[in-house]
Picture: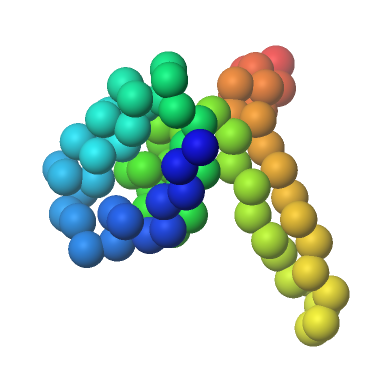
Length: 75
């Protein structure tokens, strides 16, 4: 298990892409959890989990399976 917290923050888009591809390649033998705000990195992920605050002081966890979401969007 490997937790990565904003490791892509200082990278430009090309290097974010390289890092994301490398993590995908290594994910066959290691489970990764990425904390990121970058679109490029998120495009490679299978699941997205976020926290939203619709009203002050009330947080809600939102999880999306990317493949399932894509399938629903195409229907």
